[in-house]
Length: 250
Ligand code: OAD
Image 1: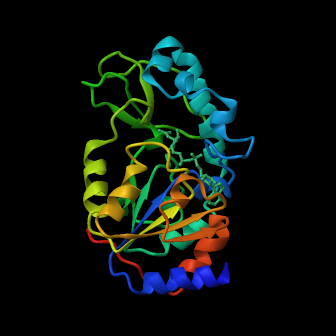
Image 2: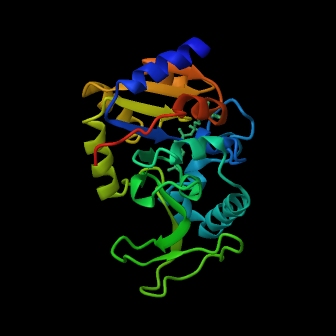
């Protein structure tokens, strides 16, 4: 591992244009469950995503979906950033593309303008009616039950992206544009199985970027790595990034 860590650091030292791309593994050491890793706590081992993270599931049983997200919100309200979030956030000029709906990178000090949330935010509700732009911040300590949109009367729902839904268009465009001009993409804690987000790794590679992957399990992202650092993000990232001031092209 030490040798690979040095290889990755030497690679980063040669790279002027870097970005990070993270998934649920980044927040695992904070105490938030991942979705699909060997850990039996992984959310999609315990719950059915078609029931809880799809428009059809919401239409079928909106109360249950809201209850489930409110249970997750309770967990999110309790957790704090871990050393991996702090190590990434300390790279203040680095863009953080993330699939995570939590705000732990921002809580660790990352510039919100430089955090691209591809899958939305669990901290907000939005109107389920695609023609209504109503959005509001949720009290994470005491999230409200299913309720009507004060603007149009449809139902409010978490402002996260569900299976089958489009990613937020402008965020996605910015992420794609960025990945076309990188020297290195630092991939942290993602199974890289959910598209289109996971396709950013292939996109970056196709445009000449190197890829460093940090994850305890090789998984899908490991196959795309120039350097694979097997380990927990909270241990690997502080050592990997110490002394760097990495920058993303904006
Ligand atoms: P997954 O749960 O699919 O993958 C989590 C990854 O984190 C796995 O590769 C684990 O090995 C790794 N991991 C676990 N602990 C780690 C640690 N301490 N340090 C580093 N890595 C660790 O999560 P995502 O790839 O983020 O979508 O999942 C993608 C999307 O699927 C999520 O955004 C979510 C889900 O359905 C939506 O909510 C729309």
